[in-house]
Every structure is written in C-alpha cells, then in structure tokens.
Length: 150
Image 1 (cartoon, rainbow, N blue to C red):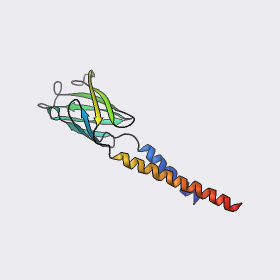
Image 2: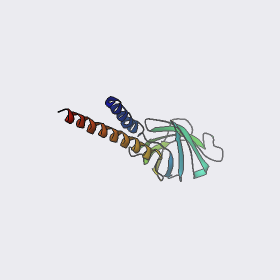
Image 3: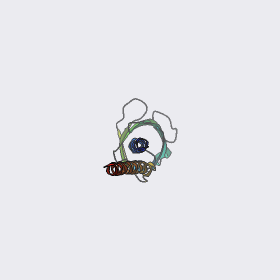
Image 4: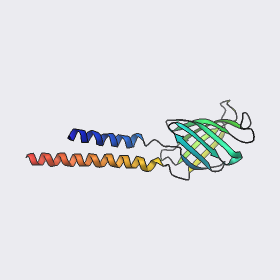
C-alpha cells in the first residue's frame, strides 16, 4: 500500500512538471494589435487586429513556427508569410520574427506580452501541489510506522 501511495505521489508530481510547458493560449499585446491564440496539443491558431490578421502553426519545445496572413488577399507574397515565436520561461512573453512569403528571410520583429494568463497555469500548480501533499503524507506515515516499531 505504501509503495502504491509513493507511486501515485510521484505521478502527480511529474504530471505537474510535464504539464508546465507553456501554452500560447491567451490574449497577447503586440505591435500589430491584440492577438488571441488558441493552442490544442501542438497546434496553434489565432487572429490579430492589424488587417484582420490570421496566424496558425505548430509548437515544439516552446517554439511556435507557422504562417501569418492578412487582408485583403491573405496570400503570399504581399499579405502572408512565415513566422517564428519563442515563449519566455515564465510563459508571459514571446519574441519572434516574421517575413513575407516563404523565402526563409524573416527580418521583421514580432514581440508579444500576455494580457490574459494561460488557463493551464492553475491546473499545473494544482497537479504539483497534489503530488507534493501525497508525498509528504507518505513520508510522515512511513516515519510514524518506523517509530511505532521501535
């Protein structure tokens, strides 16, 4: 039974750490106006104010690579291109670059600051706290059992 409790505590503890990877979901303040992003798994989609902009792509290791597009045509080379963002370790800022078309020449800068906190932050903290509490209870119980045996 003790072994099972320790195992469950460790699972919750690591679940909190594993889930702690930042999500791009939320509203961001950028030089192109407010941007709203939604991340599901490693897929990100969103919109931003300037020229009714759209953005989509995938995330790997905190780096969001994808495409942006804007009115009126939403097509390359003048109204669409590549982008790449890297989120900060505190999950509240990204720095990135963008370029016209898919030439790989991304010379524009794109910076965002989170306006609305990521919804998963509280969930991650809860998982971590549950894991710590379970481990503490198990450790206290083990010491109590050892003390009784003496």
